[in-house]
Amino acid sequence: MKNFSFAVWALVIESLIHAPMTSAQDMSFDLEETEEETPAETDENGFLGPDGDALEPGSDIIGDLALSDDELNARMDSEPRDTTTVEEEIYAVQQIFALRLNRLEVAPSFAFTLNDPYVRRRALGLGLNYWWSNVLAIGFNFLWYDLEGFQSESDLNFFVRRSARLAVPITEWQLGAHMNFTYVPLYGKFMAFNKWIFQWDAYVIGGVGFQRTRPIAIIDPEIRTFDYEMRLAFNVGIGLRIFLSRFLTVFAEFRDYLYLERFESLDVALGEARNDKSTWLADSSELVNNVTVQIGITLFFPFSFEYKLPK
Image (tube, rainbow, N blue to C red; front, side, top):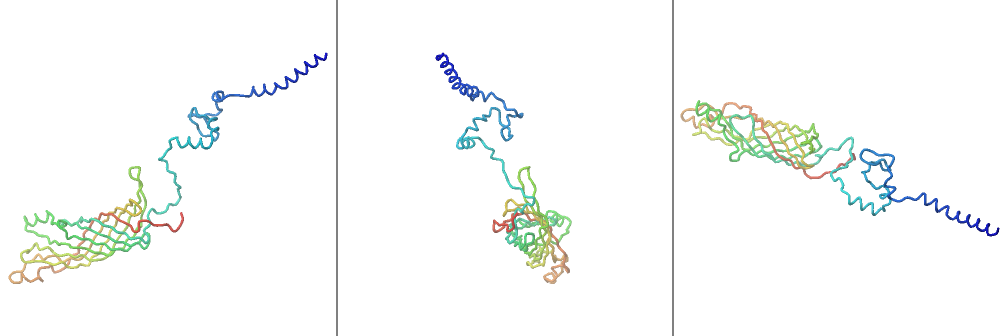
């Protein structure tokens, strides 16, 4: 009887020892079994991660969670990244691309006339403007015409005079200098080729100055010669400027220069009166307006600027 009791107690103690081990063995699993499990939620491209983000097929969720911070950073650095994506803060009201306030504008240009059928004129120009506000400027522009090949009589005037003995008085320009005021009422931006964005502004310009001109002797060139004289001149025009950067632009202007000119007289005196210079010019002056196109670039100094007010 004593041996039977001892056997029973030995069996109970053995059962208590092996019971937790059996329970733990039932709950154990290996990594291969976890890979065979399928998450409850999937999308058309792969699995959904903990945050609801789509994962690529075959992603190792348990392996990624087991990585240390250094291993995770190393994996992220080794994976290719999208370098074309640009993140930028967008504001409801954007600041102006380029401020003009308290900046000096230097504008070299090339000019040519449009509406004179008898003389073709070209010139080199230079403009200087100081912007005392962002839309208003005062400045000065200079045009130099007296260069070889920059002025020539048109074929129309030459052949008409030669065949019909009819001559139209013409003049020669040496230079023009004007003080101007500029106002910018419009500015904006546009996209070119669905790739580049350019800033632009449109402006009106006008001023007063002088033209230095002289008539060309074609009625009686054997006797008559003329000197350059100053003529009071006015100008008004419009222009368009496109910004290539915050300090460099290209521009085009249409400007009309108006002044009073005394042309060569069509009458030729006889005898000694032919040498009288007072008879060489017409009795009255005529209004001359020449529409001129000016194309050039603009440099703003200083190159950089700072906004004083926040966005």
